[in-house]
Each structure stands twice: as structure tokens, then as C-alpha cells.
Image (cartoon, rainbow, N blue to C red; front, side, top):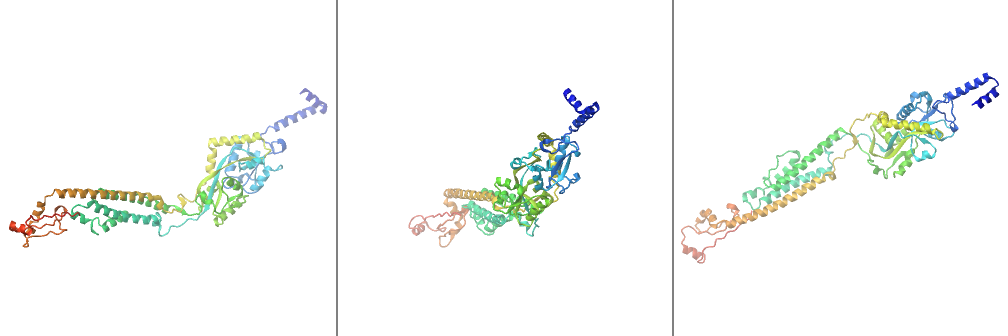
Length: 519
């Protein structure tokens, strides 16, 4: 230090000159303390009068600004607020930086140009290898996004046949077929279950219009759908099982119909040929040129790549979608959801896919320490919930379309409910098997009863028929007797001599023939 003072004295030649030089050194030392550094080669510091240039580009919903504007009051949006909050955390004041609004291509070119004006950007770049290869520096990602599919479809007005739309036509047809089959199966089950019983009970099921007849059973099976008839009265467990499953099936279908009809009446309805990501295969869809390569790595290959510099370009390819020149656009999710919220004819379909990270970007000569300070500030904002609040405020606008927006409801398909028909068919098959087993049981029991029944009991009940002058009466097959037994007998008239009977019958006791008929 003494050597320096000695050299200064030699050069200045007087103490007064030395004091002036010393004052200048102290002044320069204090002027170099400010935290901001201007963009010059090798990081040469300037005075505190210089400020950083923060460039950005209009990009809905992240940034809103006017091209070539430098007025801070015209800059707004998610990216702008993230930068302002982060700059406050590292100690910057509003006077430490200036704004510059540029189109996207001009801004990206300026960031890598040696003599460019942009020190950093508040319009988030995609954090990818291509940008890193150009020497750009990135801060900590402040937005995590993905790709989404945007389609255009105008709202459809409900027609006069809205009441049929909850079910597709296949379901309506199969519902009527099931009702007929239920009626027929109940009739068959009742017939089989009552077989080999008394003739009176048996004949009740053989009539067309009687209880459990063909017409009655089918009418009640269909009438239960709309609750137009009383519950079907059944006498066997097999038919009761069919009725129970049929009523349960109707209950489920009515619930589906009511819920689907309410949804159709209250929801905004639209239709599009693109409903899922798989529908993009072979379809005519577009993407902005910035996302073409990223989609290719995901196996999605757009047919059209649109240039994008500012909001006018985005309006242009949205118009292409509106006019039907493309079936869909694959863009970043934030933009897709923003458009779906402000325009009710734009819709996001399927779920987002892929991964995109956006972050502040710094030119290659930007001080690494200062870039790290911004990264730490953004990380603190994320952990403190500030980014979530900004995302809600700027990236999720209130929708003017109301709630319940959905694609056109195609109605319940038969493929979605055919399991009910399988259960019903299985129940009918089980009921028929039970009815058949019941008929076999009735037959064996009837035969056993007939074998134990004395013949004389039946003859006494028909004694009045034996008083015929011919001396014998034949009870024809089909005559009703107790227990469902039909007899064929030749009784002898009262008072006829026993010898005459033997003579007529070949001197043997007259045969007594009993014929058993099964009903």
C-alpha cells in the first residue's frame, strides 16, 4: 500500500492531487457494489445507472404484452408475475431491469446472439436439450406442463326424440325380447311344475288368456317395465326366481335410464371424431412448430406444423381448427385449457400426456451465480405455495361455459349391460330345470298314490253309472275322477244273477280294468 501511495505521489506531484485520486478510487469502489451487472463480454461491470433487459413474448395464458412495448404496465401474466416475485426475493428493484416485448422467433435469436439486447427472458422456454446445446442457461422450472388435444365442436341442441337417447336401439330391442322371454318362461315353468297334478290345476295353465297362460304371462312381463300391471302371481319357487331377477333387472335399467336422461337434459353436448389419443392415428391434426419434435419422440406424428411467433399466429391455427381444416390441435395443456375456458366451442379431450418443463432463461454470458439465485428464489416460491396461487390466478380462468360440459352422450350400449341378460338367461335355465325336476317328482308321487288307492273306492263313487239297463257302463278316458284317475270298467247291474255274470264273462269274474291317465 505504501508502494502504491509512493507511486501515486510520484505521478501526481502534490498531496492535493493524491487526495483527488484517492477520492476517485473510493467512489468507484462504492459504485461497483450494486448487485446488478449489465450484459458485456467477460462480465464487465457497469455503474448502477445501467439495468438488465428482460425480454418476453406474448403467449397466452403465460404472458400478455404488446410487441415492441417497454412500458411495464402493459406486461402481465403468469411468467411476468413469477419473474417479479423472484426478483424481489433476490433484492432487485423495479429500476434494476427494463422490459422488452418481442415476437418469439426474434427473442430466441437475440438470446444466443453475441451482441443481443436480452439478458434474460420472463417468457418461459422449454427446458430441453436443444436449448442447452445453444449455450442458454436455465433457472429452476416454474411451470410443469404437458400436451393436450384440442378439438372444436359446437353445442348440439336436443331433438324431439330425446327420451330414447339414454339407451341405444340395441338395448331397447333386447329389453322387449327379454320381456317376452320372461313371460314365456314363466308359462313353461308353471306348466311343467303343475304337470301330473289335478286336472283342474293343470288346465289353468293351458289356456291362452287364463292366469299363467301365454298371453297373460307375456303381457305381465312387459307391463312390469313401466309398472303398468300388478306383480306376477306365481305358485312355484322356480317361477318366483325368474320374476325376482326380472324385477331386479328392470330396477337397474330404470336407474340407468333416469340418470342418463338427466345428464343429457342438463349437460352441454357436442361430438367430435377425435375422442382419445389413439384417434390421432391416421387423423389430420396440427401442432405448433415448437412442439413438433417433442411429439415425434412420443410417437405422435402431426400432419401439419404451424409457425408460431405471437398471438396472431395462434389465432390463425385456431381458425384452421374452427373451419375444419384440421380435426384437432395438439398443444401445451395450459393453452388448451385456457382456450376451452374462454370459448365454449373448444374442448379438451382425453387426458394430458407427455411432460414439459418451463423455466426462466439466461443468455450464455449471464453470471452463473445470479442465475442460481433466481433458481433458488423460484424453488422457494414453489415450496411456499406461491406458484400454485399464481397458477390459479393466471392459468385457470373462470369458465363462461358453465358446468357439465361433455361430449355427446351416445346412450347406454348393449355391450355395457349385456351382463344383465346373461344373468336373466341363466336364471330362466335354472328355473326350467327346477320345473322339470318338480314334474318328475309329481309324477312319481302320483303313481305311488294311485297304486295305493283301492279299486273298490273308485267303483263305489261310480255306482250310479252301473245301474244302466244294459247291465254295464264304460267310463271313457278323460272323465274326471278323484286324484286325476280315469277308469275303464264294466260294472254289473244291480240284481243280476251271479251265474249270468259268469256266463257273460266266460264263467269268470268280470275283469276290472283301471287306466291311469297323467295330466
